[in-house]
Image 1 (spheres, rainbow, N blue to C red):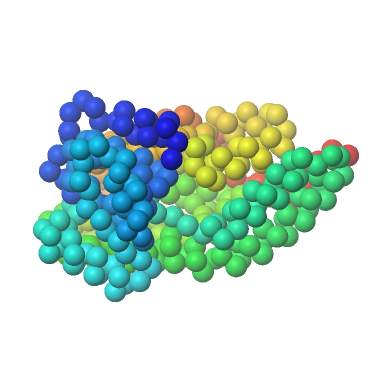
Image 2: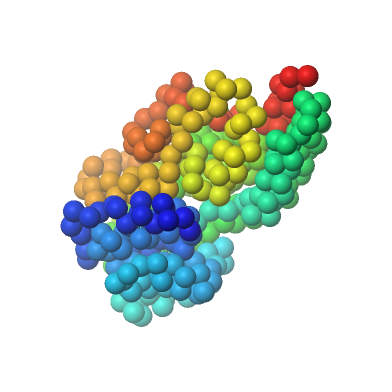
Length: 324
């Protein structure tokens, strides 16, 4: 965990405790954007519930929160029984959530290290011909890796979230607010090409977004919001992309992509705005807000927005564009 992420998260909500009295479950709340959100919500006075698969991860996250005693929610959300048991634990403790932030995501774990290594090798290639060949080989590998990880991506990014929302909606004491962390390539998966290494994640996240749109009327006691962000520069994927991939692009494309960078703290700020807004301001469920360009939060994006500059990138076309 970087010092910057922790300091950014702790800088949120210092003007009082607008979330005091709210019980907020953050899935994936022990790492990355989820941890940044957990820290910020705790600072805002929320009764924090950290969702994770392993109790040791919960303990590590809790140790980063001075003066706060978060509640663990240890479950495999892809397993309906595990999800229901964890919710029963909260119910017995009179801590059923009033709000859920769905931050957990997956689908690249099995190949992200291999991808970074091959990108690094290509970036250090001695000649354009070598780089071109390496990127061409990488293109084939990426297709295989994404295909092999598709079932896992669907389980984590789609089925797990459906399991939790459906179970929580039944047990909630009154109204439930759900905030889902998505991405621009996911939200616009059907109209914009996602980067080839991210297609499995984008597709599975989009499936859950479509479920939210279909199910808005089916759960009248649940207020749903999609927070769709650009490339998170300080995430693991963002660091890999900005270190190895973007520098291989033409300078003008690098500059355009950089305009759409965001940080974990920007997702936190968007979450703050959603959680402290009046539910009557949400309109239809789900509402969609976009986090683009160094923390800019908007209700609409245009196809010309720099946030789309990264879409459509694949290693085959990158290989073909390498100058001999």
